[in-house]
Length: 111
Length: 115
Image (tube, rainbow over all chains, first blue to last red; front, side, top):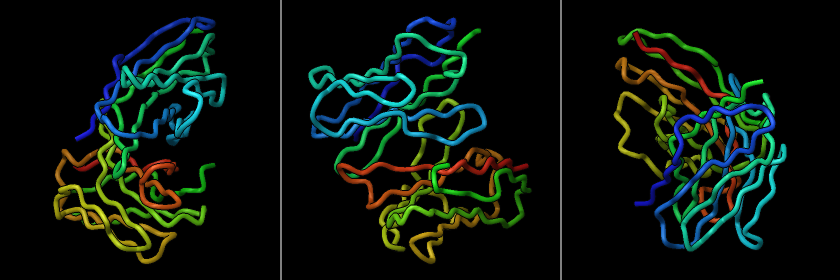
């Protein structure tokens, strides 16, 4: 069975700091990869996705993620965070038959 | 606005009550899903419907009963729940069932508290 692991449970950083959230998955076949974000009191929103092609994917709000197939990883990055980036971030992996989520990383940005 | 709505947004119920959660998608999708989101745990897929037929049931207790009358509506009927069933219940939809190339879109969820 496939699984998704997010390395950080809670990340606290200051505005303008750089952010990187780790995500690793266990499935060995072809995958689609997603990052979703859940702002306080709001629904899960798609941040970015990778289906094929360029492994460096750009999403909304200045986020990007890099798919490294050899490392089974899909890490999320943002060079300079804002207070409004405070949210919970979920990595998800879609294989042939199901979408699996990581446990989520809570990101708190201090003004 | 994702095009997926859920009602109610909050629900408190006793263990002997019967209630229903409703989900509606306005995206023209053919697949709908119920997930359970508990604190600090991965989202748990509960049920998958494709063109109103249930295609997956992930060993969910029978006190949860889904219903999909058409491709736009999905219900989750609840009865004799336990306190550990308290969680955020999320509905999602996609154009087709979750295969390669599909993106799921989520509703805001129903926050359920079982007393």
